[in-house]
Image (cartoon, rainbow, N blue to C red; front, side, top):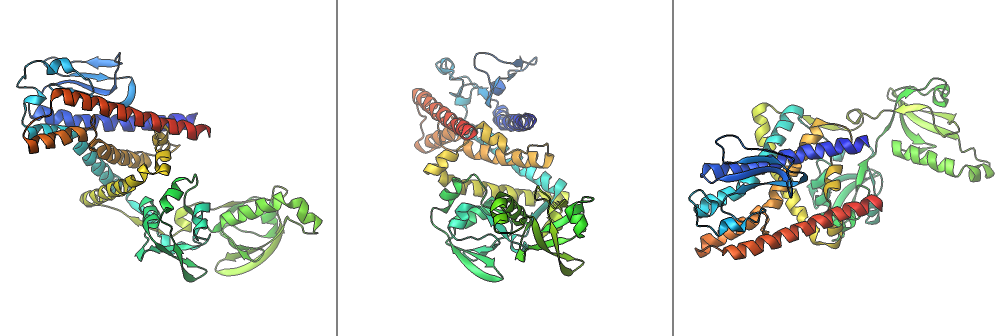
Length: 451
């Protein structure tokens, strides 16, 4: 329950900031061109409003709705979410949206998307300034990667070190690298000290989207951090700092060791029938640069009595880079543009059967936030959502900013406005489409939760 509340709070805080910034973009350009904004509402408020106030000498009422699906600014003289068609039947007023030149109306409509994108770039810049950038050099991980079943089915093997895709070297393991692999025809890996090739099928991304387990994870060396007093490991002479590199002569990682112990425990009866003591193991370890062996017996729970080192920075090749205040801005812009390109590139998979199933609602969005409060991850996810909100809103769908932009371009080219009745029907059609997508996305969340 605590995890749910932490994620829900992060989601609400993030969405509130993004909605305020987005609608603030519309509001600012509207006021710049002297267009009246009648209402500025955080979240939607059908039937009733949680809170509202109107400052003296202000034309704008500020409110907080109860339905956290977005927000809106009610701009005088346009057909929007409010569907105020009665106002459109009145003669044009000089302070209305419809009375302004097309270029001013265009800037008002793109203001929200522009502010969301600028917000993302600013957040990325401040993240790099405050925390810097760090990543694991994927080509230099000592034990390679563990792969999921889909990856293994196309030819990857546990322990492979990822080198390149179609000749382009890998740098770090992230969403871009996954897209790089899915779009490649050949991935080069280092396997047993020799270079090998894995040929990627054309439907690789569709296959990966059906997985509930990530494509790959790092294989960590088994480095002993501490030894419990009077444990089997302590009695056998295991010491903190020892690197366990083999079990019964077979090279292992930390995950390999755990799986081997679980397998022995599962087959305990059968092994004893074959006169094999499943609890008796031989370890090969490195201490102070010297390799040695020892034989010991694990306890009845098949544990040695040690705590493994879990500090990634000590176990894997980590690259760290710090940014000065002014350095952080070009780096933040580059990160934001790269994120946008990656998101847009992956949109093509949305129209596949697997992509439609992966479409998620508020449950999916909330799940991307960490289960414990982490300001670095909160701001990183907020910047990412700001990029998504900017891109989704500029799509040429009626009821979205991009739909209004599309009709404004038509007006500029054709030199005549679409009729109010057409705009009304287009707005209704767009809202029906958006609500349908919203219902489908949240229905997917419900299916994933129960099944």
